[in-house]
Length: 239
Image (cartoon, rainbow, N blue to C red; front, side, top):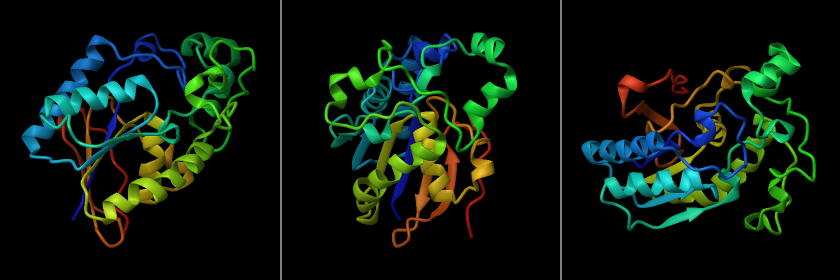
């Protein structure tokens, strides 16, 4: 059976600074680099052999992928990058300190923006220095001004169906290095997680989630984090 490994990027500079990041292209920290290399060591210890890797267009995911595959001795495998695997767009919250935002708008409102399934934050201003519509890597793309987890899933899923699932159906082993919310969207799809429950699914940085899939249906047969000491609770395997 094919396996799918989901890898959230290592700690980023704005993770460290507790800021809403979204589509802003911040890099990983020294700790993030160590987490990425640790992921590669875990690949090697597990005997995981990948046929193909996918990432977003964001540096923190790309460098995590490169460092992990390099540590595993698999830097040579084919890779594909696509904006549909980008982090959720936090709209007008982008760049703000999370604690300061809570103090300004109230914990309840910020919790709705961060954790509700289908309520997006306010849109980003067109003139904002953080507006990704001004980034040349997204030329020709209808860049959103904000996203909820629901709309993140709606742009991830077509890419999953069109680019990633066919590789898995062909029994290729696949690595996806991406972000907390784009990977959460894939987990929601695979594990059939209800809307109300998916917001509680957390993916630790730099800890690979290995999912064994049925080749015919691409339904999960088993799933576990490779670093058990840093594992978070997974949704149940669907019947």
